[in-house]
Amino acid sequence: MENNAIHKINEKGHWIVCYEVFGLTCELRDGERYATDKEIAEHALNFVNNLTPAGRKSGKIQPTSSSSSTSKPANTATSENIVRISNIPDFKFENKQLGKKLGKHVSDFGGDPSKSEDRAMVVRIINDIALKPEMVVLGDFAGQGSNGSRGNVYFRIKGNDVVVTKTDGTFVTILKNGINNTSVKKALGK
Image (cartoon, rainbow, N blue to C red; front, side, top):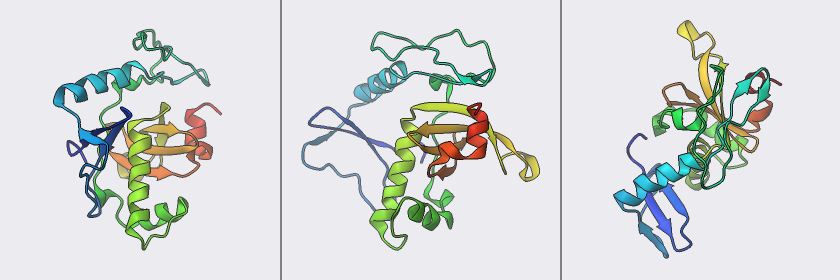
C-alpha cells in the first residue's frame, strides 16, 4: 500500500494511519481530523527519533540509543547485523499479497475469515506491527532467496507477533506468536 496512507489525528492527539482496504473507508469519525503535510513530516521524524533501535550482535539484543524525547538514533553500530529503525525501508503492502493466506491469518488471530470486519482486523494488525514495531531484526526466512531458498528479511516485532518483510520493505507474512518461530529465534540469537 505504498503512498496510500491517510493520516488522521484524534482529539487526544493520537495518530491514526489508515489504509482503505476490503471496501472499508478512512473517512473522518467524530473527534478526528486529517493531518497536514507538515504534521505528517514532523510526526515521521519524531517517530523515528523516539524509537529504540536494536539488533543482533554476538547473540544478544543491543540497544543503540535510549527512547527519551531528546535522543537521536545512535551512529555507533559496528556489526552488519545491527538494525537501525531509521534505516528500515518503508513498509509496502497490497491487499493482493494476502490472497489465499488471509483466511488462515484471520483464524490465527481468532477471527472468522468470512467476516469482512475480521479480515480488516488482520490488516490493521499487520499495519500496526509493521509501522510501529518495538524491535526490528535482520534475519533469514524460507522462500525469500533465489529459487525459493532462504533469504534475508526484516522481522518487525511487536509483543509476541511478527511481520516479516523483504529487505526492500515488501510484506511477506505475519506470524502470530512469531517470537517463537525458529527463524525469528535464530535472528534474536536465542
